[in-house]
Image 1: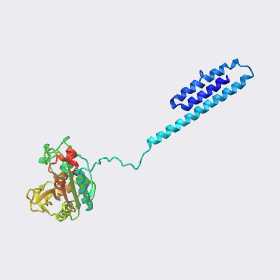
Image 2 (image 1 turned 45 degrees about the vertical axis):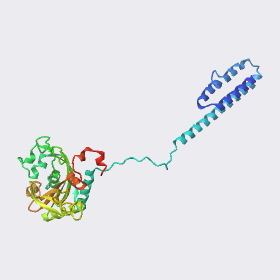
Image 3 (image 1 turned 90 degrees about the horizontal axis):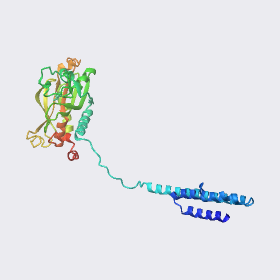
Image 4 (image 1 turned 135 degrees about the vertical axis):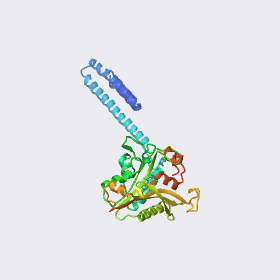
Length: 338
Ligand code: PHE
């Protein structure tokens, strides 16, 4: 029996030595399990003499402990090895150059809007926003555009109900501001506007405006001219001049369309200005006294000027873009140029 135990011990230890992670469990069962070889030897102990029994028992225990110890050691070793491999595999070389991801950039309309905002903020204007779904009152009535005015035609305006519409300029923001603020007021209102126009190279049913409003005591046409000239020089270059052409808007009196001298040819005439030397950039005028009083501001005490420009138009002029549709198509080949 001694021989048998010795043999089991040697065999087991050899097997453990060569075992892999997966075969260890089998080895354990084979030698130490209920039907294992060592157990079989112990079962046969009944046939031994009383003197021999404790000796063999002790020896068997020693063998058991040896095998268990060897298995435990092997388990530890294989786990340590596995961990080492895992750490090696997961090691990150922080000095390795990364894969460059293509970065997006700001849409030309957004970048021009920000440029415009910054110019006016620099002149002391505050940016104010308002709802795109508006009441007829703020979009038309308060702006001195009466019920039968052609601008109210559903051909020009998207109506949601009789009284609710998609704003056609950003002017309603100015009415709302005047209603709840006392002069001095100096604001710009950029944002989306909607007009029932068919899409072509110069028209879009959705476009962007930036309108400005100044109301205070003693505001004159001179202030309007000075403000717009400063703006034009900052936007199109120091040598830019502006000119006013008489025009009509229901909400301003007098009203004007404002041109800037062509910044490509300096006024001599070229392709951009179509030989004119001048490019129309915006509409403007002195706020109509009716509009002031509609908003609770006394036109005897206060006066003001307003102007409105199309952000698409300014972007097209300043970036040399000849089709408004390009702004909305998200063609990467177009966008990548800006
Ligand atoms: N609201 C005018 C438009 O949409 C622009 C404008 C604003 C003109 C303010 C004069 C004064 O065309």
